[in-house]
Image (spheres, rainbow, N blue to C red):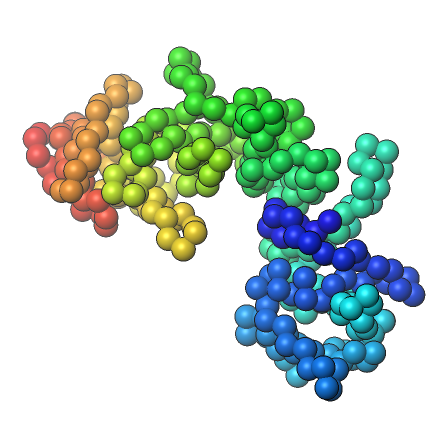
Length: 329
């Protein structure tokens, strides 16, 4: 069984030849987006990956990467109609790291994982567990280094430790002090807030549309309110003492979705704090084409109490950039 980015793909098995693991060249290369060209007459292979050009020949131990040639332990060869290459060399050629998960009594399977070299250790260990769940027959709907969602008995189930699962569906949270497992409902979709207490201590916001789940943002402070407008996601975070660079950002953020990825930025004037006053009272905030209206004041910076109070007021914050207008002191 082969999985590419969590999706099952039909594939022939890896094989061992002269003590080396060989893998299907086309499956691995094209799985990472490379273009493979096989010349049947010359028995030569050309792989184009990003800005790299990789050359080799069947039954030849040499592999050339951007003009630099090295000798492989075992040559590329054809087995059962498919071209195989030593795993180590195709991994290095594509600038990937190879991870082996050996068989144990509790995990009766063998895994070979080929991943980006910059993946964190946390992500690697969780990735191994996700593939383990897949090999156990679990239907994995979504996973990242913070949580995994599976479908079981027609219901979505979620786990932060990747072993114990709970129901993953919208529910009302009555405990204001709860940091994670919180849902926000908007006109467009539901949002789920997870708190990664054990490792990064980040607050991670997900958009949930049925079985379509995507990670919108990860913050160092609690996310307290979420709204949507014209396809973008807007949210407020809660101030915490010791927040780095508080004078260079705000607690009002927006996230936009482009090319399959979410990106976020702050809104308003750097150093300002919106939606809450100095005593923690919560104010409503509304969105229209002209901007976001809510209470705000300058919290960060070397201001006296009186100077800070002079900035109290109802503000209109632009939907992009870092501009605001004082509507009412």
